[in-house]
Length: 304
Image (cartoon, rainbow, N blue to C red; front, side, top):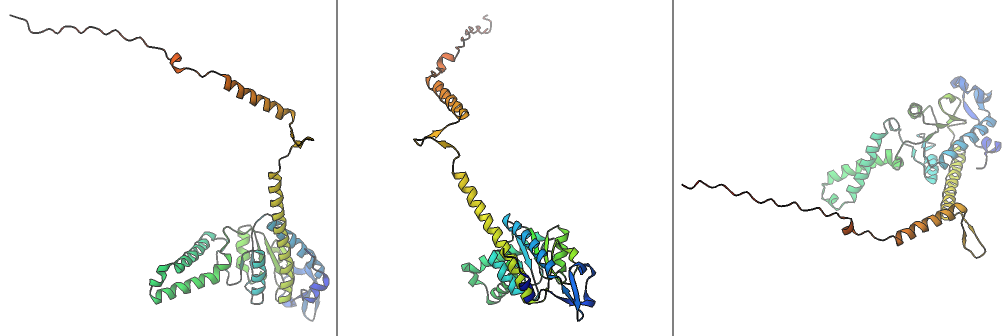
């Protein structure tokens, strides 16, 4: 990942904060100065925090886990949707579904319902429904697609969250903290950086600022996915190749232990071949028959 330069951050307007009267005292370490009643963010600290967050995102992607991107602000919706789709990560750009993390099982039921409606709509019997019923099913499917379509492939809880504005997405932050899910977030001067694990002090209102930070994070995620693929291919090649030495004629050279095991196996095989099969008739012991006792004569009635 190419590091964001100071000039790039400056041109994107990352340094602009909120009005002085709206500031959060916990953001004091990241504020450079105040000018015309507006706080200016220290871009050197933004650089350092962005590199730290990118490294964390890269490691999560390399391990094969998912990062959920959350941005319901109007200026950030399209940016997040495009970048998340490019790296194959789930995202939320509409209203945050309450309980998406803390009540994940119920959300999965709604996703399964959406897939069931898809099967119903592609079925031949769908045309047999009345016009009103078809319209209701189509509207319900569109509603579920709008709310949950971007997280349809999320089969388990995400390993991390990326949030654009933690003031607006305070419910998502609270759910992630309750479940101890790491959070990466763009934090402006009116927010509390202590609520997230990897705060990035920056302007969370300007589209250029959001675009720049998200592009750097998406590059890190792409690198992590690429490294994961290379490691998997390398591991597969190592499994296919057998680890042994070969002599000049191309024959395998066995170690002493392998040679002993080979000789032992051949001996056992030879003993089994030369061993005579046992005759079952010889082993059987004949039991002597019991002598039949003569039946005692029946006593009939006495003759007169």
